[in-house]
Length: 316
Ligand code: XMP
Image (cartoon, rainbow, N blue to C red; front, top):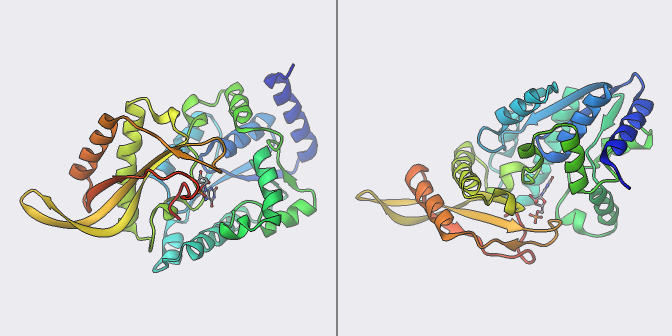
């Protein structure tokens, strides 16, 4: 019978054997896979550097939370604050694919600048990623959305046998089980997925600090309410995004002319298809009221009732 404890010990044995006294570098995002990876390397006791890039496209307080999470697990991480660089590079760009390419390219630059010379790289690739990358190579899916994993530099290291992917045989639920067996707190293991390009794909058109701040406020209220009402773990992914179109409203006794926010909450098996969630009206009402009262710049709240396909989960 499959035993996660045995599996973990075997993984750690393999990691020690492959790494020896070399230094392994890994990127951490705060997400489930990279967190489990970093904690696993930490437990294996190898010489590890975990690097967290703050791209300025994170959610409210996210960088602080990620740092605090690793601190409470006793794993040292290095933070690179590259917010300015990302926002500068994105300035004025409204095309979705160009935005993605800017973010993906800059991430690689910033990450490898921080790494310097890596002897080995560890990645939190899961079994479904392995399959997806294999099929992406043949289909046009990789053209539709350029994925940040498995980029050139990594392929180079891979060719030299210097890329470690200890989670590559696991499905998500097994990664969570492995994480739990190493004492990773429940809330970290059950975080929703978050896209590499961050809030930029929830901010159609140009990305500015003001727009990001509005998204952060709306999103924090929505996610907070999902947790408060016990819905956070019932949905696969949820967020608030920005619709940068101004419409007329009334705030106080004044006419307002402001943007709208879209709330999206979906269920999915694998993110390839998704269905929107019939959230309780009370949750939606409280979220809407709070956003309209508290977030400057928003006078309209919409709930996205689009399935995937044809809509994607993100707006870009
Ligand atoms: P879409 O919007 O394509 O999203 O329906 C499917 C899932 O993938 C996430 N996503 C990404 N994740 N890098 C990532 O690591 C990306 O570039 C990226 N784009 C989308 C999205 O949040 C959803 O979970």
